[in-house]
Image (cartoon, rainbow, N blue to C red; front, side, top):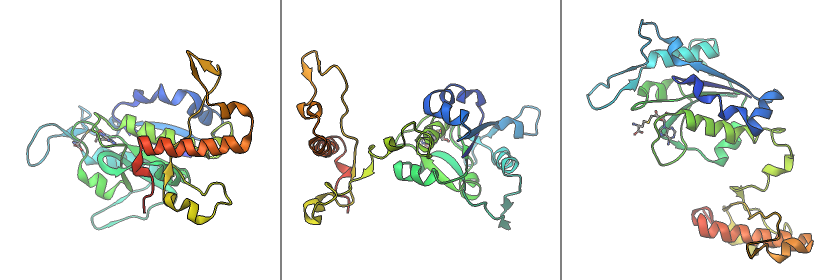
Length: 256
Ligand code: SAH
């Protein structure tokens, strides 16, 4: 997977890419990351990337020209104009980070993990000229119902979520299988469909994890986890995941 980041703050990404799973994925060549300074694609002396909004109002808006040209330089081709866009390469997404985008979630992350290349456009100020969303980006993505000051953290967050789903990125292949936001598969696998009908189209959060010490400040780890009975542990984890989902994210359960 190749990630390209287009930003007016190229130094922003130095830290977050250099730790843990992301660092290892880069070192082993599983992912490649390049950061493009948007100002490189300006043509005026002041390297202007923004301008005042038509129609008036507060703030500045990122201009379309440097963004189109930055993406074109990455793709090595012209993306076209109003008389006709050029063909889009398969397995490549051009993602505009935007508070007004579609909500990012684990399902989207799984879809992205199958791609070969992702180009991220990070907005700043009041946002980005709408023609970028309409005619350059293939996706307009929000990371949540709140407004941040730039698209860099959101892009970083998507890269993190996607990278850990690329086969080989996690040390232990199994460890992304039982995570939060997995589909609630029948449990046990032999369960009659009627027992499980309440969980159709549900997603579950992760089950609670514990480690040593078995008793800490008087709070002890549930006995069943210490007992060594794998079937009982699996049952407890399933029930605990359902209970936690019900408590923290009831919206994930029973979505028909
Ligand atoms: N005026 C815009 C907010 C601009 S914030 C609005 O009200 O929708 C500046 C930039 O931060 C945006 O262009 C976008 O790239 C980024 N950003 C802010 N919140 C975001 C979010 N929730 N998800 C993704 N990107 C976000």
